[in-house]
Amino acid sequence: MPIEEVDNKLTRDMSRWSSVSSRTLKQYMVQVERKLETAIALEMPDSIGIMFDGWSTGSTYYVGVYAIYVVEDSPQRVLLAFAPLLEENDFGADAHITFITETLAVFGKRPDCLRFIVGDNCTTNQAIATRMGLPLVGCASHRLNLEIQQHLAEHEALLSQVNELMCQLRTKKCRDVALVYGSAACKEKRHPLEFDVQDGEEVYADQGCCRTCEGGRRVSASISGLQEAHEAAR
Image 1 (spheres, rainbow, N blue to C red):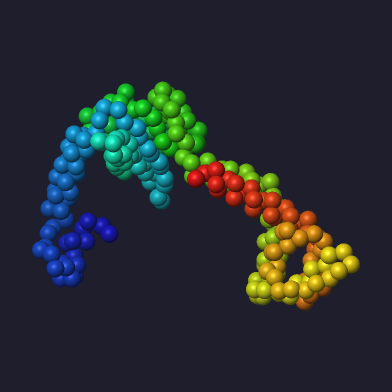
Image 2 (image 1 turned 60 degrees about the vertical axis):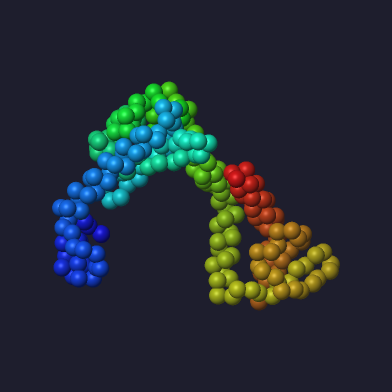
């Protein structure tokens, strides 16, 4: 909602608060910002870390910067900046370093007070950390995402088969599955994907089609790999 909305007569009539103009509101916002900057600067120690990330909305690229520090054995994470880069056409490492430096200056700090950087494991952040001489603490969620993408890429053909199967079964949530084990046969109600721990072949009774359980065992192995990655990321 734009700040100018407070100038709208209908908005004023719907609010129980006293009317205020957008110009006055902006003045109060600036005063609050300055008071917060002063309070954060007084609390922030001389040894801190920063965590930042950037993203685009429309044609504008924004960067959010957090300070990470400890006060009386209590970890703090405080938002320092949430704004576009100073050079909006430059998204490289130097532009980010300039943005970080200017942000720290607002709170009376210099880059030499930094002890580490937390960010995505991208080449730009690696370059930022290298040029500033700081260790980069890679985002665990980003590392997990990269690992999962690599894991799934190795099973692309299998995923396509599973997707094809689920498309066929979309209109029938559960089917009668006849599981054939050697010379012995048995029938039971099971979810069509529950073939990952069985040997032999599965026969879909309503379609009369057979599929070997090799794909099922591969699905089971893939799921186990995903579970291991999930546990390791905790």
